[in-house]
Length: 152
Image (tube, rainbow, N blue to C red; front, side):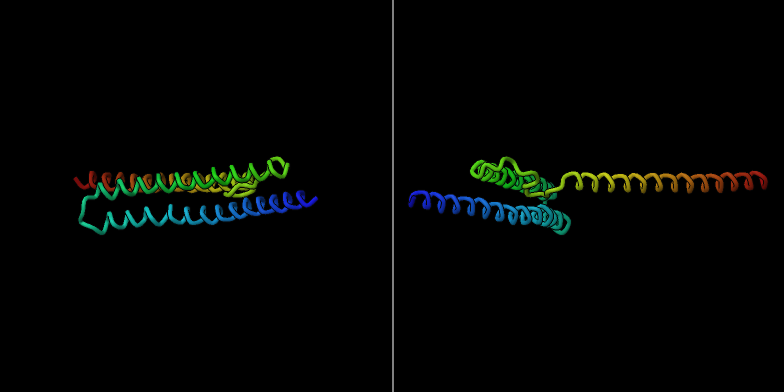
């Protein structure tokens, strides 16, 4: 019976460590996303503010994006493996939505689709407005040419 209690305690520690790893991975993802924004901005700022070789900063900018994206993919993969182990240990199967980037993928997809629809509407409105302005300018130019021809 004492051996069972030791295994139970060990199992509890294992589950706690896996959950702690998941929490740390969430923190790492947040930091990685911040770095995904700020580090390339730093290289772009250096690109425009220095008189040095521009190609070097552009290469550093692109490389930093790839490195940070690879880091984020690695963290997500490690977390996925840890979640799979935890589910295997506890015989819970796969829990839906236990990932690092969110739990409701359908809502995220709907939000993205709505944003894309709004962008498309704005583009169509902008195109229509430009076409109207172009027609107005064309009419003005044709009116000026007609008046110019009348005088000559």
